[in-house]
Image 1 (cartoon, chains in turn red, purple):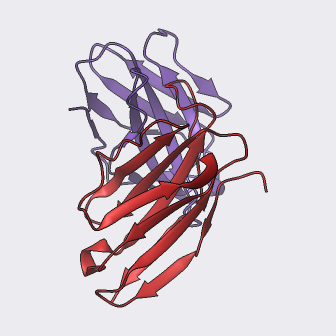
Image 2: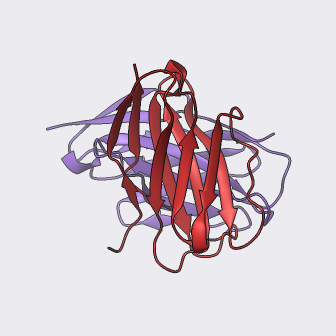
Length: 115
Length: 116
């Protein structure tokens, strides 16, 4: 595939459960970003991976949120003990090198609903 | 901290007409980049146009152009000859020119409707 892919497309879970969201970036892209899109807050940055550098976690809203990127490619965003306010669309993006001039290409997102 | 403001939650345009979406931003940086992204109902964010702050010339991409006013910190998007497929949410976004600041900062979006 040529684009960023995300799975699942939709996820419904019960409050208190853990969820994992997956992102496959464009092949060769070294930078990967997670954003959250919710009705009240718009699009918010969560976390940024660039190559082998330590990730920028400054956007993570609480310690229930974590992410990892294995082998510099696929990334997983994990939300522990989900709350209703975690309901949102989670978007992943990747770019070639992570420098300011690079275009970020987005995936279709995962819609998370916490009941 | 940088902020991006889109003051028009919704806009409407007649097919084939021209519409302008507004965006203002606040920053103390001199080196940065500005973007307009389109998000159709499929949720996929698509880059429409980008502008480097150091360039005085306004960016254009076919029917899409921007009016970049650096001193006023304004970055509006003009869509000419609007088409039904232009109907979507449009987000204005800012990115710092500092290499360590990788993320985009988004406005809250403008929902554009196109009337046939």
